[in-house]
Length: 310
Length: 291
Ligand SMILES: Nc1ncnc2c1ncn2[C@@H]1O[C@H](COP(=O)(O)OP(=O)(O)O)[C@@H](O)[C@H]1O
Ligand SMILES: [Mg+2]
Image 1 (cartoon, each protein chain N blue to C red):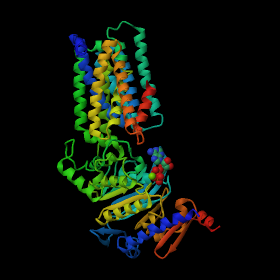
Image 2: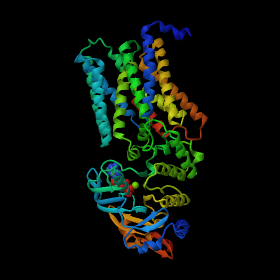
Image 3: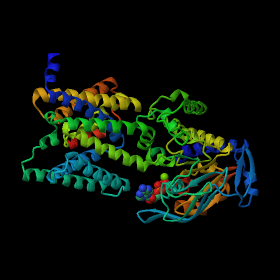
Image 4: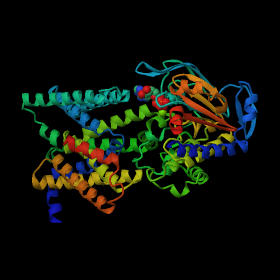
């Protein structure tokens, strides 16, 4: 007992995951053939090309006050990739995103984004959705105003938005089903709506690359699925997506590409291929069971499984 | 009517009232950002540091404003830098240094009681002390602050809401923070004569948290806070005149009264829903600690 409701949830999402795969949004077969090359999308067509990566970390070490969070990380993310960084809390996922964004200075190594070295300054064409926990929900701003902030780079010198800015924001809100909430203060929204508002802020600047920190934390399973689906759609338009999650079953197992991370890159690839007991033990420092049933991959904490057999 | 017009026959009152109107509005404007940036203790510290600078400048027979401005801007830049690094103990360091500066001012005053300038006014505010130079300084600083905040509205809003993301989007957050610290220092120096250094932090924070109870919109918050700041300062000036109390004290007391009234009203209006945004209740309790 105790495991059962969790498993139903997993099965529900796993089912949805299959439907994504059937619709060709997540192409498993093609990925198997590619042998270390990386997937790209090009206006919805999938092609595999070896080209300069969108994000390139070479021998990067990071830390705060000289105690390292991670060391000697090499990581490439390619044009059109939809990748997730998976690891337990405290493994350095947020720090990894921040070093890519130029918010945290690496102690060692080089970070290149869209061909430009990141040196204390954030690269352009990047969208960022921070962890929702870090948002000041009491701040007196409306949905509309938050999304408008994302147009900062495109806005003119005037302190207020022009009519084009307004039109673009209202079109995007419409597309994301947020029109009815445009004038609401941000606390008065559901978790899923809040996540969409901050995704809208990232999308409004027409980014080539979006980084999302735990976009599925703290929302229910259906909302998690909706968010993943929305991100898949964005990815199909050619936007490279890198997100973080600590959730193996509901999220990581549905991504086309995962990077198991715990102070270093432990493994990366399609979840069906790299989610092995060994990799997960190294990532989570605990025993996990990988259950493969047809196209489904379920991961269970062994302790929990044994208990449910009693 | 007679009650309102009577004190107008005095030049000092007309000057004091105009100074209070401007300084109150200025404090209300700055207060919005101070509250939302959680900087109220910085305002408190900076005002105390400025007092030390003002006294020293007098001892060295420098112009009051020159000394206070030099000292205040220096303190503002140092505090800005220290908080940016977010080292553990930054609050403590700021607290110690600013209080020491204040204590030095007090010590110097008690050593030599021959000052013509009324330093009690600098501590608690005094409408009698507002000279036409004070008035000009307040006017200039108010214009400078209003223009700075107007032209950097986007940058200030974004970096106040979410500094890291603002940086990602190319907002020059360091420059914005520095600019804001300088505006804050200038506002404190200019309002010192009316509000008094010990009470100025409350005069900055109270209109903003009161306005925050009444609106969820940022632009309305700014307008309302300016309005409340000016209004409470003007009423406070009359109270100061009729009750013969320090103007800083009467302004802050009246502003607190308005805050309590609005708090009661908003709790009454929506007893079950979120009554006070958490940031406001936290600010308010800190404020009470300060006083
Ligand atoms: N600003 C910071 N200052 C000091 N240590 C930090 C800071 N941010 C994160 N850390 C530490 O770095 C480690 C990694 O944190 P983080 O990158 O947030 O991991 P994750 O996102 O995987 O939970 C943690 O041990 C955390 O305590
Ligand atoms: Mg994190």
